[in-house]
Length: 228
Image (cartoon, rainbow, N blue to C red; front, side, top):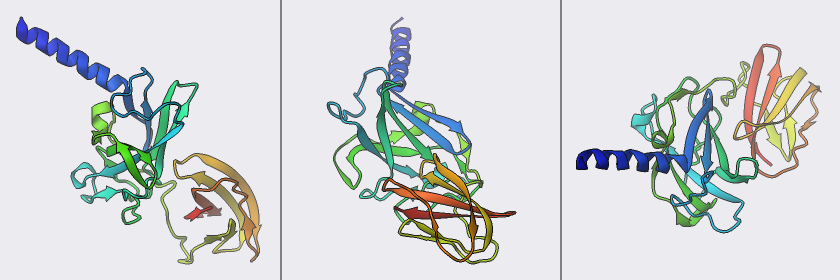
Protein backbone atom coordinates (compact mmCIF):
# COMPACT_ATOMS: atom_id res chain seq x y z
CA UNK A 1 0.00 0.00 0.00
CA UNK A 2 2.86 2.34 0.82
CA UNK A 3 4.48 1.72 -2.59
CA UNK A 4 1.18 2.37 -4.38
CA UNK A 5 0.67 5.62 -2.49
CA UNK A 6 4.21 6.75 -3.31
CA UNK A 7 3.67 6.01 -6.99
CA UNK A 8 0.37 7.88 -6.98
CA UNK A 9 1.97 10.91 -5.36
CA UNK A 10 4.83 10.84 -7.86
CA UNK A 11 2.39 10.78 -10.79
CA UNK A 12 0.40 13.67 -9.31
CA UNK A 13 3.58 15.67 -8.71
CA UNK A 14 4.76 15.12 -12.29
CA UNK A 15 1.37 16.20 -13.66
CA UNK A 16 1.39 19.37 -11.57
CA UNK A 17 5.00 20.12 -12.53
CA UNK A 18 4.27 19.83 -16.25
CA UNK A 19 1.02 21.83 -15.99
CA UNK A 20 2.85 25.00 -15.04
CA UNK A 21 5.02 24.73 -18.17
CA UNK A 22 4.07 23.19 -21.51
CA UNK A 23 6.33 22.80 -24.54
CA UNK A 24 4.36 21.95 -27.68
CA UNK A 25 5.39 21.30 -31.26
CA UNK A 26 2.67 23.32 -33.00
CA UNK A 27 3.86 22.88 -36.60
CA UNK A 28 6.90 21.58 -38.44
CA UNK A 29 9.95 22.97 -36.63
CA UNK A 30 7.92 25.43 -34.54
CA UNK A 31 7.78 25.05 -30.75
CA UNK A 32 5.48 26.95 -28.37
CA UNK A 33 6.28 27.45 -24.68
CA UNK A 34 3.51 28.38 -22.22
CA UNK A 35 4.39 29.16 -18.62
CA UNK A 36 2.35 30.12 -15.57
CA UNK A 37 -1.17 29.37 -16.80
CA UNK A 38 -1.88 27.65 -13.47
CA UNK A 39 -0.46 30.67 -11.59
CA UNK A 40 2.44 28.48 -10.47
CA UNK A 41 5.86 30.10 -10.90
CA UNK A 42 7.97 27.69 -8.90
CA UNK A 43 10.23 26.85 -11.86
CA UNK A 44 11.12 30.51 -12.36
CA UNK A 45 9.74 33.61 -10.64
CA UNK A 46 9.68 36.43 -13.21
CA UNK A 47 8.67 39.10 -10.69
CA UNK A 48 5.62 41.29 -10.17
CA UNK A 49 4.05 42.43 -13.46
CA UNK A 50 7.22 41.76 -15.44
CA UNK A 51 6.06 41.61 -19.09
CA UNK A 52 9.03 39.75 -20.59
CA UNK A 53 11.82 37.37 -19.67
CA UNK A 54 14.31 35.45 -21.79
CA UNK A 55 15.08 31.86 -22.79
CA UNK A 56 18.62 30.50 -23.22
CA UNK A 57 18.27 27.59 -25.68
CA UNK A 58 20.47 24.70 -26.79
CA UNK A 59 20.34 21.27 -28.42
CA UNK A 60 22.92 18.69 -27.39
CA UNK A 61 24.73 16.66 -30.05
CA UNK A 62 22.82 13.52 -29.04
CA UNK A 63 19.48 15.32 -29.32
CA UNK A 64 19.53 16.23 -33.02
CA UNK A 65 20.35 14.34 -36.20
CA UNK A 66 23.40 16.47 -37.09
CA UNK A 67 25.35 15.16 -34.09
CA UNK A 68 26.45 18.73 -33.35
CA UNK A 69 25.81 21.02 -30.39
CA UNK A 70 23.70 24.08 -31.18
CA UNK A 71 23.51 26.66 -28.40
CA UNK A 72 23.02 30.32 -27.65
CA UNK A 73 25.69 32.53 -26.18
CA UNK A 74 24.71 33.32 -22.58
CA UNK A 75 25.16 37.00 -23.43
CA UNK A 76 22.87 36.91 -26.47
CA UNK A 77 19.50 35.22 -26.02
CA UNK A 78 17.02 35.74 -28.87
CA UNK A 79 13.95 33.89 -27.56
CA UNK A 80 11.63 35.74 -25.19
CA UNK A 81 8.62 34.82 -23.07
CA UNK A 82 5.99 37.55 -23.20
CA UNK A 83 2.89 37.97 -21.06
CA UNK A 84 -0.24 37.06 -23.03
CA UNK A 85 -3.34 38.35 -21.26
CA UNK A 86 -5.68 36.17 -23.34
CA UNK A 87 -3.76 33.03 -22.36
CA UNK A 88 -3.21 34.23 -18.79
CA UNK A 89 0.38 33.05 -19.13
CA UNK A 90 3.81 33.83 -20.55
CA UNK A 91 4.09 32.56 -24.13
CA UNK A 92 7.16 32.17 -26.33
CA UNK A 93 7.98 30.62 -29.70
CA UNK A 94 11.13 28.86 -30.90
CA UNK A 95 11.15 28.47 -34.67
CA UNK A 96 13.82 25.85 -35.28
CA UNK A 97 13.54 26.41 -39.04
CA UNK A 98 15.01 29.89 -38.72
CA UNK A 99 16.53 30.19 -35.25
CA UNK A 100 20.11 31.40 -35.23
CA UNK A 101 21.95 29.88 -32.26
CA UNK A 102 24.11 32.80 -31.21
CA UNK A 103 27.12 30.80 -30.02
CA UNK A 104 28.63 30.53 -33.50
CA UNK A 105 25.59 31.92 -35.39
CA UNK A 106 24.51 28.47 -36.54
CA UNK A 107 21.12 27.45 -37.94
CA UNK A 108 19.81 23.88 -38.20
CA UNK A 109 20.07 22.55 -41.78
CA UNK A 110 16.70 21.80 -43.35
CA UNK A 111 15.59 18.25 -42.63
CA UNK A 112 17.27 18.11 -39.20
CA UNK A 113 15.44 15.89 -36.72
CA UNK A 114 15.34 17.54 -33.29
CA UNK A 115 14.48 15.14 -30.47
CA UNK A 116 14.99 17.42 -27.47
CA UNK A 117 15.93 20.94 -26.45
CA UNK A 118 17.50 22.32 -23.32
CA UNK A 119 16.67 25.75 -22.01
CA UNK A 120 16.97 28.11 -19.07
CA UNK A 121 14.63 30.97 -18.16
CA UNK A 122 16.50 34.17 -17.25
CA UNK A 123 15.78 37.82 -16.58
CA UNK A 124 18.13 39.50 -19.06
CA UNK A 125 18.76 39.20 -22.79
CA UNK A 126 22.51 39.71 -22.39
CA UNK A 127 23.14 37.73 -19.20
CA UNK A 128 21.24 37.09 -15.98
CA UNK A 129 20.88 38.21 -12.40
CA UNK A 130 18.45 35.35 -11.79
CA UNK A 131 17.62 32.19 -13.70
CA UNK A 132 15.88 28.83 -13.57
CA UNK A 133 17.66 25.51 -13.48
CA UNK A 134 18.35 23.57 -16.67
CA UNK A 135 15.07 22.41 -18.24
CA UNK A 136 14.50 19.63 -20.80
CA UNK A 137 11.75 20.20 -23.35
CA UNK A 138 10.66 16.54 -23.40
CA UNK A 139 9.81 16.76 -19.70
CA UNK A 140 7.09 19.25 -20.55
CA UNK A 141 5.49 17.66 -23.61
CA UNK A 142 7.88 18.38 -26.49
CA UNK A 143 7.71 15.87 -29.35
CA UNK A 144 10.35 15.37 -32.03
CA UNK A 145 10.16 17.58 -35.10
CA UNK A 146 12.04 17.99 -38.37
CA UNK A 147 13.13 21.40 -39.63
CA UNK A 148 11.54 22.69 -42.81
CA UNK A 149 13.40 24.13 -45.80
CA UNK A 150 10.82 26.86 -46.47
CA UNK A 151 12.61 29.47 -44.37
CA UNK A 152 16.12 28.03 -44.29
CA UNK A 153 18.72 30.76 -44.76
CA UNK A 154 20.15 30.20 -48.21
CA UNK A 155 21.85 31.74 -51.21
CA UNK A 156 20.17 31.99 -54.61
CA UNK A 157 21.14 29.74 -57.48
CA UNK A 158 23.22 32.52 -59.02
CA UNK A 159 25.61 32.46 -56.07
CA UNK A 160 25.14 36.20 -55.53
CA UNK A 161 23.63 37.24 -52.23
CA UNK A 162 21.12 39.96 -51.48
CA UNK A 163 21.77 42.27 -48.55
CA UNK A 164 19.86 44.61 -46.26
CA UNK A 165 21.48 47.91 -45.25
CA UNK A 166 19.73 50.53 -43.11
CA UNK A 167 16.35 48.93 -43.69
CA UNK A 168 16.72 48.75 -47.47
CA UNK A 169 16.94 45.56 -49.51
CA UNK A 170 19.59 45.34 -52.21
CA UNK A 171 18.43 42.35 -54.30
CA UNK A 172 20.92 40.03 -55.96
CA UNK A 173 18.82 39.87 -59.13
CA UNK A 174 16.47 42.05 -61.16
CA UNK A 175 12.86 41.41 -62.06
CA UNK A 176 9.49 40.97 -60.38
CA UNK A 177 10.03 39.93 -56.77
CA UNK A 178 7.80 38.65 -54.01
CA UNK A 179 9.17 39.84 -50.66
CA UNK A 180 8.18 38.58 -47.21
CA UNK A 181 9.63 39.83 -43.93
CA UNK A 182 9.53 37.57 -40.86
CA UNK A 183 10.45 37.88 -37.22
CA UNK A 184 13.00 35.30 -36.07
CA UNK A 185 10.12 33.37 -34.47
CA UNK A 186 8.71 32.83 -37.97
CA UNK A 187 5.86 35.34 -37.59
CA UNK A 188 5.11 37.18 -40.83
CA UNK A 189 5.60 40.95 -40.49
CA UNK A 190 4.67 42.01 -44.01
CA UNK A 191 4.56 40.66 -47.55
CA UNK A 192 4.55 42.62 -50.80
CA UNK A 193 5.61 42.61 -54.45
CA UNK A 194 8.27 44.84 -55.94
CA UNK A 195 10.23 45.34 -59.13
CA UNK A 196 14.00 45.11 -58.73
CA UNK A 197 15.67 47.48 -61.19
CA UNK A 198 18.97 48.22 -59.49
CA UNK A 199 17.67 50.58 -56.81
CA UNK A 200 17.22 49.52 -53.16
CA UNK A 201 13.78 48.47 -51.90
CA UNK A 202 12.48 49.92 -48.64
CA UNK A 203 11.36 47.15 -46.25
CA UNK A 204 9.53 49.49 -43.85
CA UNK A 205 10.23 47.53 -40.66
CA UNK A 206 9.33 49.79 -37.76
CA UNK A 207 10.62 47.88 -34.71
CA UNK A 208 14.23 47.12 -33.84
CA UNK A 209 15.25 43.48 -33.80
CA UNK A 210 16.47 40.55 -35.91
CA UNK A 211 14.49 39.64 -39.01
CA UNK A 212 14.48 37.37 -42.04
CA UNK A 213 13.52 38.56 -45.50
CA UNK A 214 12.53 35.99 -48.11
CA UNK A 215 13.02 37.11 -51.72
CA UNK A 216 11.34 35.05 -54.44
CA UNK A 217 12.07 35.57 -58.12
CA UNK A 218 10.19 33.01 -60.18
CA UNK A 219 11.36 29.55 -59.10
CA UNK A 220 14.35 30.90 -57.16
CA UNK A 221 14.23 32.11 -53.58
CA UNK A 222 16.66 33.44 -51.02
CA UNK A 223 16.40 34.18 -47.32
CA UNK A 224 18.60 36.82 -45.70
CA UNK A 225 18.91 37.62 -42.01
CA UNK A 226 19.21 41.27 -41.01
CA UNK A 227 19.05 43.55 -37.99
CA UNK A 228 16.92 46.66 -37.84
